[in-house]
Length: 305
Image (tube, rainbow, N blue to C red; front, side):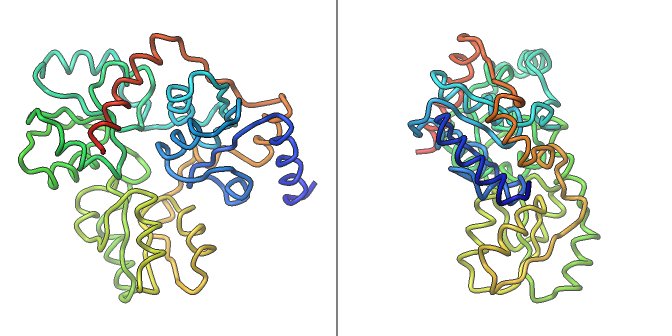
């Protein structure tokens, strides 16, 4: 069976089974093509909550599927590939952060959305990479404990100088692996190209960028820009998607190390098997976890308005 045949079968099954398919921007192109919605993790969760379908199929990683379940507890939510986790989301757990909170009892705990549902239950507010600066600025408390990504936290701290932001040693190992030497080499090779990077990159890399933003922010910037050449400093899938979206522009991958194995774990066959009932995993969260984790997401919405 070729790709187009498989895509056609998936679209038929999706309609028959009343399924809304979500695809994160980092997954393969052939999956994005059959998705109802594509984008970053929070956008997908909101899209799912507004969709009329009874079933949600997440083509991404586990914390994203959990967020969908938190926002749509009445729907059945499935993760297409059960092994697709997130190295950053798994770095810190409820026990660790409970201990840290005891040391900083007056700090507002700000959790990046790239955290588990269980950890979100003890956090005060959730943020995305695109909303973090605005939300932290809108928090009344000056003292902030930002988890888990110290690189995104460092970026937020620079944008929010009035806040006292405590960071822990965590983050995305994929984005953090790029070093300034690699960046300068690419800039020398492509001197006319603008460098667009994700704030999960280390501060030394961000300092060399022409634009720092979320996945969707990077894509929007590149699409709308008058410039014709870009170096993309996030997961390599974004450069591929942008090539399709802007065939008149040139996109260079900052580093071949920017490949997320968890995002690449989901295949089109996984999507098909899940729709057939032969694969995937239903995300099950107890009512207390959903209720408690929802509080920090609701606070994100309130402070982000």
